[in-house]
Image (cartoon, rainbow, N blue to C red; front, side, top):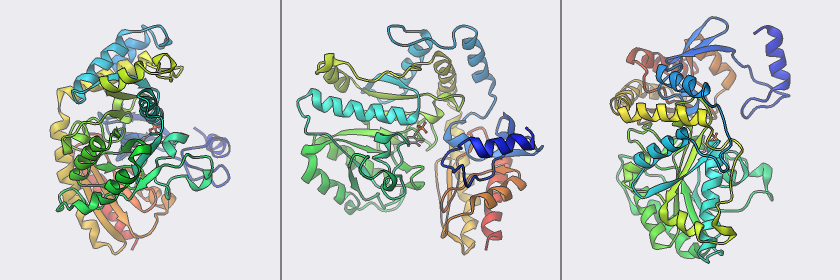
Length: 427
Ligand SMILES: *Cc1c(COP(=O)(O)O)cnc(C)c1O
C-alpha cells in the first residue's frame, strides 16, 4: 500500500462507525498469523481484540486453512433453497450437540445482526402462530448491544445505541434497567424487581425477552450476576414469554463456559451465535431454537414457513471452516486457556487502578476491561498502543481486550503492560 492508497481509503471507504468527512487514521495490515497482526510499516502487533471476539484460535490456523482449501476446491457456494450439502449438515449436527439439549432446530444466518433479526422474527411468528398476535413487543435490558440492522438496533441501549438518530423509525420496545449486581457479589432480588414489574404489567403484549447472558458486550462491557439470568428465565416461564439469548459475543468459551447461559444453568428458547463461529475466518451466524417453537411456527399461518432466506444462507465455505473451528472447541484446550488468561488479566490489570484516570477494572473469563472516567482519544491511544507493539481498540471510556485463546503468557503480558502504561502515562 502506498500513501495514495491510504488517501483513497480515507476519502472513499467507510470503516465501522466512521465519518468520511472526519476520518480517523487507519493502519495497513498485510498479514496475520497466530496472535500477530503484521503492519505494512513493518511492525508486528499482539492482537488484543481477536478481530472483535472472532479469531479465538489465532490467525492463519492450519486446521481452519485446510478446511477452507478443501471446501473451496469442491464447492465455494451454492444456493440453499431446495439444495442441501454436507458442510451445512455437519455444522448443524455440531451446533445441536454443543448447545443445550432442548435446542434442536437451526437457521443459518449470514451475520450476527441477521441471526438476531431471525430470532426476533421467530419469536413474533411463534406468537402469531399460537393465536397470540397481541404479544408483539420485545423486552430487553439497557446497556445491551444486538447488532446494527433495524430490528436489532431497536433493542440496543436507547442512549448509547442509535435510537436518537432514527426516532420515529425504530419500533418502540420495553427496556428494564441494566442489572447492577456483578458476578461474585452478593445477590439481592431487588436487582430484578423492575423486570418483574414490567412482566407483571405488560406480559400480554410481550413476545420475548432478549438479552446478552452475563456479559453485555459492545453496549458497555458490563458483567452481571448469573442469578439475574436464572430468575429472568423463571419469569419468562411464569409470564409466557420466550427467552432469546444473544451469545454472539459470549459463545464458544469466551466466558469460561461453552455458553454464558451455563453460568446460570439455564437454557433459552432461542439462541443466537456468530462471531467466533468460524474462528474469525468469515461471516456466519446461527439462530437455534426448540422443537416446540419450530413446530408451532410450522403449524401456523403462512404455510408454516419461517419467512427468511438470505442469498448466502448456509454458505458451504463458511460452514466447512465453522466445523473445523468447532472441532477445535470440542477438543477442549479452551477449557484450560480461558481460565489461565482470566487469572493473568486479573493480576496484571488491577494495577491500573493506581491511575486517577481509571474508574474500574473488571475481568470475566478471557475478557479484560479498564473503564476510564473520561472518553478516550482513540487516535492518540491507538498510536501509543501500536508503538508498544499491541493492537487494542478503545471505545468510549473503555479499554478492553479479549485475546485469542492461544495467546502465550508473555504475549498477554505485553497487552496488559501496554494498557497499564497507557493509564499511567495519560495522567
Ligand atoms: C457483534 C454482535 C452482534 C452483531 O453481529 P454482526 O455480525 O456484527 O452483525 C449482535 N449481538 C452481539 C451480542 C454482538 O456482540
